[in-house]
Structure formats: structure tokens, C-alpha cells
Length: 204
Image (cartoon, rainbow, N blue to C red):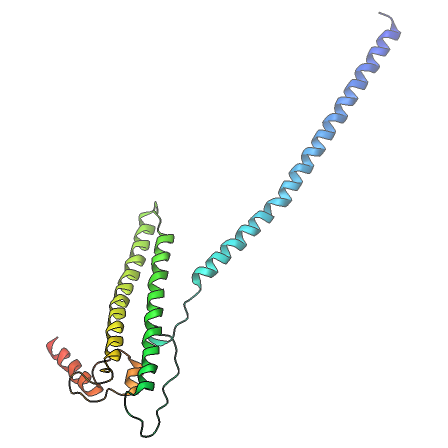
């Protein structure tokens, strides 16, 4: 084999290796670009997920609008001089209070049922399960008391329909507008209620 042929073969080999080096450099450059773009895009996804979770938490924590004693706030009744006790205006005033209170309690029961249905999950950790069960049992006890209160409110509305509302069941005197506004389901005047509470303390 002549020297010219050997030189030509060496040039071909060097050209082939140079082409391979250029191709490898291009591949590594494209890989670096892809890695850089993926690294830049990754934190954007995390930011969106954080925003979504924060919105969900804000919706859950949002409290229900209610006044004192779990009732909707209302404007106190303004009595007029010489006004007859438990006239049509007063009955309409207390009917609106009782109806709004009943509606608020029923909505709260519905919210609790939806909350328990949505958040019910089988936690693998027994401590988490115990915490969830204690929270649910507390909510159920609260809703049970409210269910009894709804029944009492319905009975009070029936008394309004029979025009028997606002009078003491024990002595028959007026219960009073301000006492009924503080406790619309009251069936005893303040004196009879005090005597009843004293008797309960003595029996306990």
C-alpha cells in the first residue's frame, strides 16, 4: 500500500471522527436545552397546585353568617303606647324570627351532612381515624340538639297559629316582648322559670 493511499485513508478517518464529534456535541446541546426547559416549567406547576389548595381551604373555613344563639340577626320590636299585647304586628314579628331561625338550623344540618359525606375517608393511621370519628360524633351531637330545637320551633309556630303564644303556661301572665326576643321558644314567664330552676337544683 502506497504512502498516498495511506494519507487519503487517514484523512477519511479524521473527517468521519470530526463529523461524529459534531453530532455528539449537537445531541448534548439539545439534551441540555430540554433539561433546562423542564426545570423552568416544573415550579410553575407547583405554584398552580398551591393556589388551588389555598382556594379550597378558604371555602371550607368560610364561617356561616348567624347572629347570637345561632339565630339570624333581627331588628328589635318597637312597642307603642297603649298597644295590645300579642296583636297581629307582634305575632308577625315573632313568626318571622321563628321562621328565619328554623330555616338557618335546617341549612346548617344540610351543610353538616354534605361535609361529613365529602370528608369521610378511611385513614391508615389509627390516630387520624380516631380524630375524625371524635369530630364527627361531636357534630352529630350538635345536630341532634338542633333537630330537637327545630321540633320545638315548629311547636311554637303552631301556638302562634292558635293565638296562644306569649302567655305563661304555669300562671297565665304575659311572658314579655323582650324575653321572647331573647328566647322565642319560651313558654314560662321569668318568675315561673326561676322557681322551676330552683326546684331542679334542689332535686339534683
